Image 1 (cartoon, helix red, strand yellow):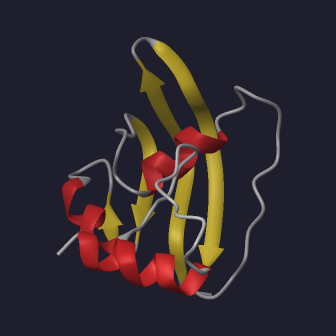
Image 2 (tube, helix red, strand yellow):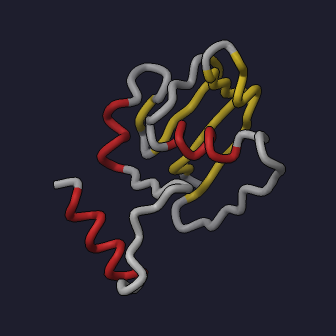
Image 3 (cartoon, helix red, strand yellow):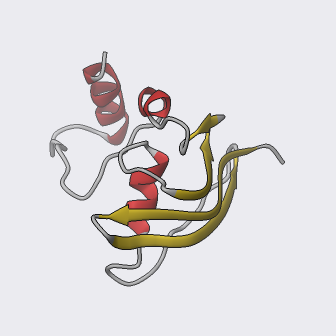
Length: 106
């Protein structure tokens, strides 16, 4: 299994607060993963770390071959993340939204 996402004992801090502490995760290409947990469990922080939006400060973290501890910037153009606050339009289909937002980054 070639993992497209690989975290080992990964830690992310929000300020001085450990929003993720010791996360282990492997995701293979084409695999579907459900992140489930209560508010404040770190689900959004994990996704933001995968997209290179928050730093991983300890452990190991790699997404699409990019070492997030060494430099997370190269992963940003490779990963799309649509968070809680969306810019979705009621009159567009899911496919139309994907096309729209993929073009917006160009």
